[in-house]
Image (cartoon, rainbow over all chains, first blue to last red; front, side, top):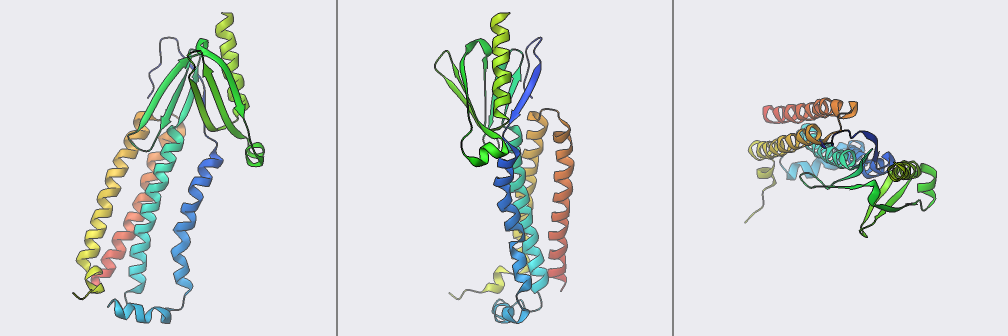
Length: 173
Length: 74
């Protein structure tokens, strides 16, 4: 869990759009049902293969065994992708922006910068898919010539507006 | 050396494969649960995730173990 400073409150948590997670994991669903194609092939087609493998009459349990293992593997892959998706966030607080980049398991980058360091924020929504579904890239340039980029973030304009309004508040306080 | 498929599909070989998969599964599950507990933002989703993950995993584990038992009993 991220440690907040005294008086610091979380205002918004920005995440990648769910569509990107869905497109990453959709192939897992296809791979999960792919072995079912074998069910529609007549059993006689496997007779030679089964006799060569010395597994005649073991077709169904063997299929179930390997398919279950395959499903377990895909399920773990799904959990890994979800962990990457769910823990890869930008936390907007009333003091700063915390950029947490989750890169697989046990690889996590956390960086933060204050609103008064921000020089400019830009939103890039390119292409039909990004426009229709509503995600894009928010890039923040800081005074120290660093830039923080959040690709595929959901509601990029709202994220930018929130950042700029906090930036404005910090400057006018 | 003649290659025997039956050796690869023997109960011992399948059992070793099952054991290996279960070890990997347990190791990864511990890592997932640790990450969700340690870095999750205390939302409803992250609280329900371990229950859902473990339930579905239990179904797959049961399926694979039952099919293995059926295989060695035949």
